[in-house]
Length: 289
Length: 295
Image (tube, rainbow over all chains, first blue to last red; front, side):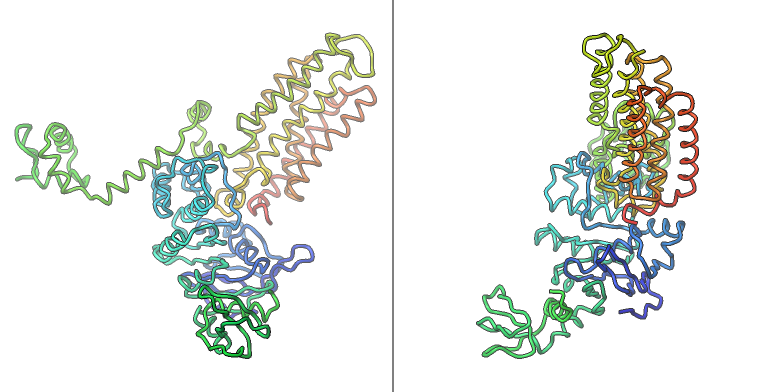
């Protein structure tokens, strides 16, 4: 699926990438405006590959990327993109013997913040933003998974990036931390372009004005969360029993079965679809699940 | 109340306190105010009304963050005094082959191989299948040391540039800081740190007097080859190939009872040629190191 990309802040055209026999991306087209865009997809859908290409750490086999009008294939323009980038990889490694503050200081230098005073101010700012002020002197090896994830988010915020690429940023965060993360993203100054991948449809519904669904290396949906939910309108049912004929069935928190299918199960009532319903229906249609 | 400071027997005016808190007061007045504030609780209390609490909290958090960033040891301070930029030294702190545990391992291996050479030379243990008079003229005893010493230097440099040893390699790849600068800085420091114990051990073994100097060029050539090869193949494979290029001829010459040929004149010329060619290749393909580990 290739979209009409127009004058978007970040755009990708016909991106393809293979790993041996596996086609990770298949002619992906994407247009990202300022604000938050959620990238939804199951494991192996190509989300991480797509985000690493947008973050300039990986190259596509075919297709092109433009970030703020800059082409990452050109060395000088690639550096310029990186100056405006904040990136949280899915599996961020840490120098475990570093303290939290020393690690942020290290990443700040990599981001060309060489002045010591400015670096300290930046480190203090992102420590506060990620709620890590009290952990500045803690060694990374002593941090829990959730705290490390917050440290990963903090390092991505260094330098007030114009483009923030966050690969599974809410993984490992508890519900309270996820709420705080949503507030943090929504309150970032300067209206940067933010792309985040997640498995959590409720994260998408809560903070993303736009959502892209990536399945089997292809863009299957691009629009608002309401539009994604609407794709399942009239096909989501709630019932007391499991329905073998439904495409998908699962038991909700209220103990009732939720069914996504073309035919209503006996005794079921039609319910309003959610973002997750729309996503699951798309996944089912694509044969990704 | 006036903005000028009235003297030690009077109190500071509102304008002065506001200017002092905002950092806009005149220099001489600031000194007077500070001298007065030290001994006047009333003016200190009045000053607190003019202080921007948010700015104060921000400054405090910056100071705390700065205090939480380690200053580094005597080596870093010495290098800083020698003119090496502080930020570059902080980047080097992530190099595994510059850590004490790594350097201790290198010294440990050298002690073992150099100790074996010394033991054979003094006749404390046999020379392993090639009996002969003790001492360095029995050149096979040098084989383990000659085999291992340049490989230790190569391993130190490889650990400095292989992404597998840098858990934050993806962050470095996505950052604007020059990948080539980072790679070269780390490699040169790792090279220097490894060469010190290797050359010291070369003096300690019972070999020809020129051996310490003769090991330098092969070590440099191997490291340069690994770096240059990493621009065209996987970095790990490049390090392995470089190691094999040393080990195979070393073993062949050792089998022919002429191990020192590996570091004598013709070999030195060959190493110099390899070093120059690899440096040129590295320069020509330097952009490769800006792309990151995933390509």
